[in-house]
Length: 322
Image 1 (cartoon, rainbow, N blue to C red):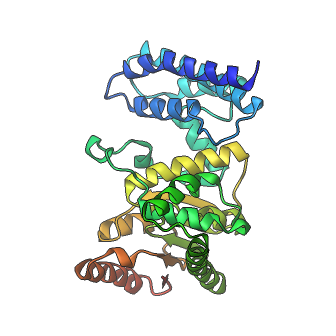
Image 2: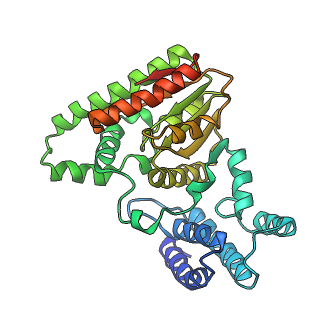
């Protein structure tokens, strides 16, 4: 069977499963997870090359997902118990261990990958927030310009190659030399922060307003034992954590350090503390922000400085790199 035939079969099967997913109770905690998995498995960007093996594995995963959805539809909607976990372990191992799993299996897999996601990020944002693109236009432009540096070997999902270039065209910034100059500016900023981190060698790093920056994935990928927590507003981090999770699974890659995604608003001190709570506060850590301050008013800057000042006074071994 050709690649195109498999893609057609993938999308046909996804359309067949979707009504069963939508028929589940809105209160069922697995409904959102099923929708996310269905979308991720059946969606293939036009510019992405999908091998026959990859298409076959996705097809097997969809069939396994169909089984789980149908089984869920005939149950009482309660959460998986221990017996269900055991059954699904067998089913997953025998059918498709790479692409799909029950939430219990997802947690197990992320532990193996040294990658964890704050549980609340697994659920879609409220309906009123879905109207907005979680990745801002400026982040896409920076992602595109950052991707011009081939030495970073970035995942295409974080470069927004086509969207970023289109946004620059819309702004009538089309001169390749201007693109190169901007790329140097953003890459100098990126490398300067990395150099400061390398000089201080903090065992734990928390990056606030990380956006689509690849720093967390790259740092945890090469720094053995380092804990890297990256955060941004929940809508964006929900989107980014899925990109990271899928990238790690597809590449069959295990990180050298540990990467955790959480939602946070730097103007809310409780939100900041929530991110800090996942690390060892008895050990030193570095706070990182890049390209953040220019978005704030004077009052918001004052609030940010106050919030970070509280952290730095409470944890005297902590540093802030910005």
